[in-house]
Image 1 (cartoon, rainbow, N blue to C red):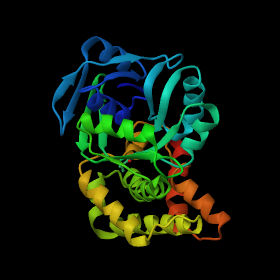
Image 2: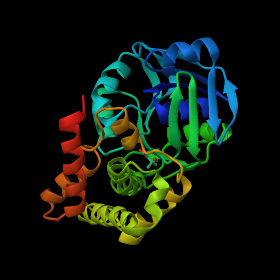
Image 3: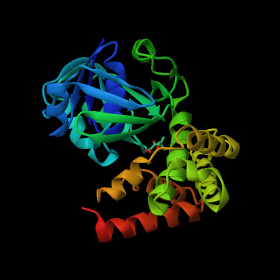
Image 4: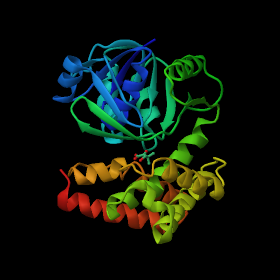
Length: 298
Ligand code: KPL
């Protein structure tokens, strides 16, 4: 199979590198990362240790592939969708944080758009080199739930490349569960400047768990069956599996970049308001990260 990865930051580069062991992969990335990959290959370190060949470009227009994987930040989905619309793909898979990305992509594209979640820990350490700081899993399927032939094909291709992959028929619930994980882990680790593993005990664990419980309450109000215990257990599992990881939001804060707070905790607060559900911990976390963005963000 051949893949194009749109938005080869930390996670996109890791997923692209793992897939390139078995499939033809093109990364759409920024320079100098794209040039380094094209000229010297992609080095995957940490939990893995290999160098693999992959194509890389800074131009996302007019691409063709069996599958385009979207890993851009949630606030760049619209731009990515417009670029994707100039190309040809059998299917597009979103592996992004936050909610609503798949609908936005589908509004611009003719091909099937699949939903996915990835819980791998990844850090881009230098151009052409990504470190895997926690082995997680990929879950993918039809964005509205149910069976999907493209999801089966892509899931099989991911598994063939050695990526732990589940093909799911309940993606709406899985997306809310991943939202609970991100709502608990991302702002907490970004504000406290700690690794994900620091959320396994103490008050920080309770803050993350409460953010996840609030997210589950909003999910249930939206008709998605996500018990509090499942949301909290998912946070614990990911904090454990990615204990040594610097979350994507902490990476953004440390690099002085805009964060995905609006698509994560901001989304929970907004949907909660619509459903008359109080989400004080999500509101506090979102407010603090927004305050940081206003002072320090781009
Ligand atoms: O999705 C992540 C992120 O950092 O954005 C997790 C899974 C929490 C890994 O850090």
